[in-house]
Image (cartoon, rainbow, N blue to C red; front, side):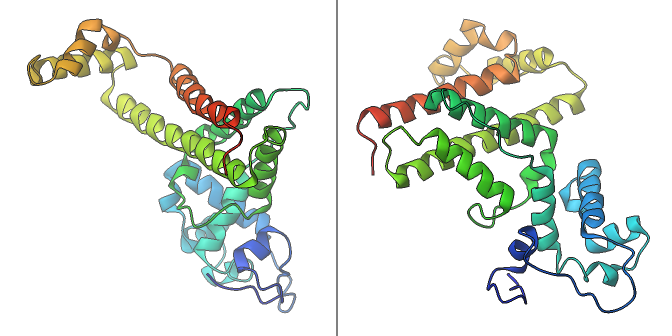
Length: 251
């Protein structure tokens, strides 16, 4: 990862995200701004996916040369980080009187909203722990929710990774399933019933007793809402965190 030339020793992308990297002032008066470049890149990602974002594509949309972008953004990787930062709203202000569990529930639900509103974010590779301004702000928010739990600091970070990972995975899985259902032209209930019929043809009680019991229960005859599935999983995850807290905090 390229280093900034501002003496901070930070990667250029982080120095830019934190406003620590000044853009060159020499040359003709700029007709662009970093915000315009990032906004256009976000628009492309929202319309065609993050894979469609490239420096030439952004430059063409802005009506400028590709080279002119490099006065503001050093590389596509830096642009992706700035796009992620632009699409992430401020962390919620948690109720100081709320329990740790209620606060973590809100933290998780608000993150899920971000992913569902910007599914392209899920396609940006994770390159390291939270380090941009918004990422650090969300980390601080999550840590504040766990402040009075008695958890060791290491355990608090592990809880944030666990809950955040669950949120990201759920959004990725459910958005993929939803896209497949919409492409099929069927409703979620129709899609699930077709799946049940497929399983009934391919499985037998002798070889697949567990699957047979699921089919016989009728649970595959109607789809639960996305929120129901998310809340069930979140409750299971936080039940585990509650058990950890009860055991004394874990190190």
